[in-house]
Image (cartoon, rainbow, N blue to C red; front, top):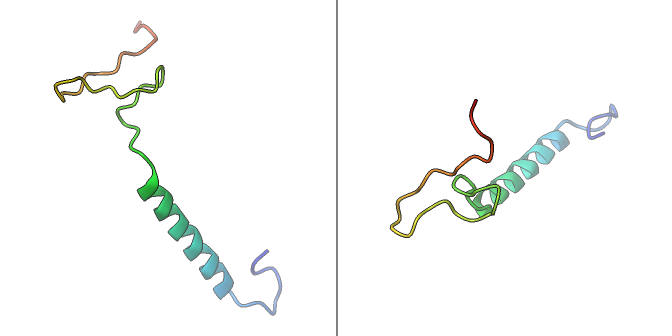
Length: 62
């Protein structure tokens, strides 16, 4: 692939990893927080008063 041939230098691998790291950071900053999102309805689990309510699980505990 990037360093499969003898005449290529390993700096191409470093450039590739650097580009992937930058793209990962961009995706991290542009993505939304999903900690308080319910998987059933896709809405926030916070209440009107600003206090977060626990998200109920759809399966019953044994």
